[in-house]
Amino acid sequence: MKNRIGVVRLLSMGFVAGVFITLSTALLAEAPKQPLPMQELRAFAEIFGRIKENYVEPVEDKVLLEHAIRGMLAGLDPHSSYLNEEEFSELQEGTSGEFGGLGIEVGQEDGFIKVISPIDDTPAQRAGVKAGDLIVRLDEKPVKGMSLEEAVNLMRGKPGSEVVLTIAREGLEKPLRITIVRDVIKVASVKGRFLEEGFAYIRLSHFQSRTTEDMLKKISQLKGESKAGIKGLILDLRNNPGGILNGAVAISDAFLTDGIVVYTQGRTEDSRLDFNAAPDDVLEGAPIVVLVNGGSASASEIVAGALQDHKRAIIMGSQTFGKGSVQTIIPVTKTAAVKLTTARYFTPSGRSIQGEGIKPDIELSDAQLTRKEVDEATRIKESDLAGHLENGNGKQEKTDKTQDNKPASEVAKKSAIEDDYQLNEALNLLKGLSIFNSWG
Image (cartoon, rainbow, N blue to C red; front, side, top):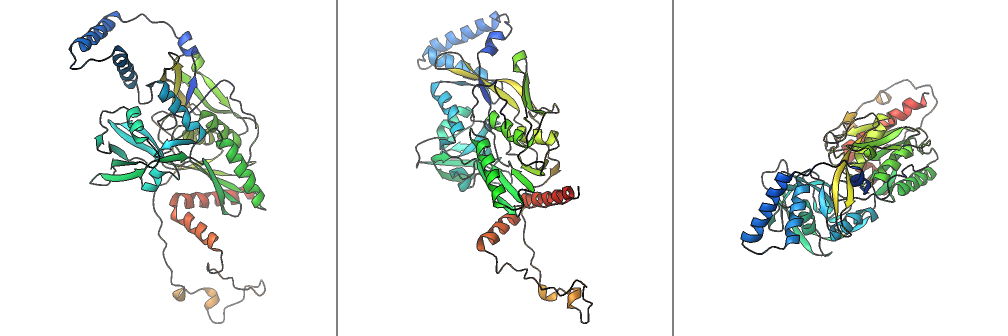
């Protein structure tokens, strides 16, 4: 499979729901020069001087100017920000799949820190943090008025140390206090197995530098485990906050044979980038169901949007997060840069993801299944009636439909599927699609 992403030199993941970035100085070089607003700059200089003279404590010029830059960028949108040397280094950590912290992707909402999604198999997920939670305190420090970077720095710390999150959760009258032990976060972005013979399940928790390679290996492994091959696939992107753009394009490309996967468009001419699929499909046309929810953001939305627009997959679940903007890292000194929103993502049909997200083809609530026990002793079938006719197919041995003789692993796997309502519905749909396709 060809990777047709030659234009972008470096892409990495930021603090907010799979921020996509490119290193570029061309944006500034080619941007049209605008006259400086002299009156506003004079006002700025006047305020700068007043602070220097009258503030209760002395403040260094460098500190004041950095605060001014941070405030200017923070006022634009939740994803534009100033990056000093340490912050830029931290921004790049997420692409390797190993970094320190709690294991949550966060954004900002109404001055509070909002959980976009907890990452699979991390301290935050194990402690019960959920997508949509609002963090109102970190330890005993209110987060109201904090920048996103400040809050992230407070959540990070030495592995083994504790942090207490005070969380406001929809439907609960009182805030929750959740104690989490920090750890080194090692994210296995791809998991997979067969739900039933021929029907595969792939879970993508993040889009990292190796995600596509790992997914292709998993699919190849599953093909080798089943005599029937893969008759259908469930791609689970629920609570996947995004990651590397290359990964999102390559994952989509794995199932598409041609056409645009996604494109970007901003104010400048060079902001238009088209990402196209190469002519191969690892599933050779087998049906796909993609599961999404409100914690599916950025790269997840690119994949869902591309497969939906090309009619390659049915999207199930709830509306996605709606993070569809491009952040460009623009170096301003040898040690500092700005992360600036420079474009929007569009699906192949021209839909903007920003603020809208991807609407599923089939909407499902996040419900919980409960098993209804049936008293077999009271159920009467035709074969139980005295003198019933034989079916004419010869003598049939009754099959034992209980799970007594099944391996424990098979029973546990079936139970896990039934406990997940959305996954269960996706499997039923996938089996129906497979039957329909087999009719030719």
